[in-house]
Length: 139
Image 1 (cartoon, rainbow, N blue to C red):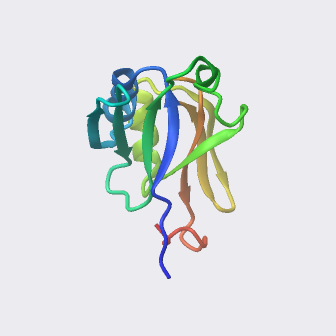
Image 2 (image 1 turned 90 degrees about the vertical axis):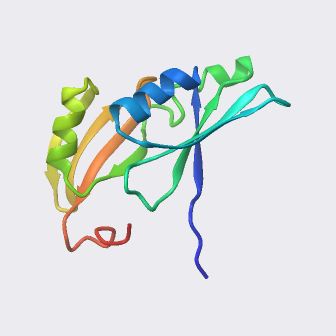
Image 3 (image 1 turned 45 degrees about the vertical axis):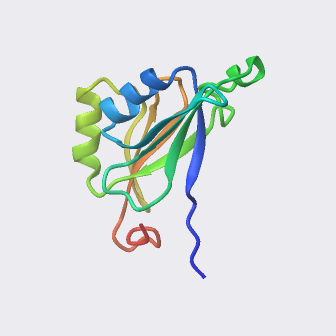
């Protein structure tokens, strides 16, 4: 059996500002941006470049009760983990384009990691695993 986590829905305030961050700053690929007239929303899917893992579904808050989750989908914990094959390259590029890091690069037994905020405040780990880590070659 083979299964893959396909999408993670990320509640956003505005599709275009979210695309400017994820595609413009982080360099994600835009996979789909399709208007859904029956619901007056867009189906917007982005993915890390070269990735074979899941994608983000950028889901605009459509009800007032959803708006409070924008930027706080994990209650202040790191919510998403972005694996890279070259930590220093990506960290440097992200700093250059103004991505805000809230924890500096740190080397751990499992690899190098730093924590950044997305445009809404959700926390992300940028991580590169050491070669012998179980996840190093998995994705």
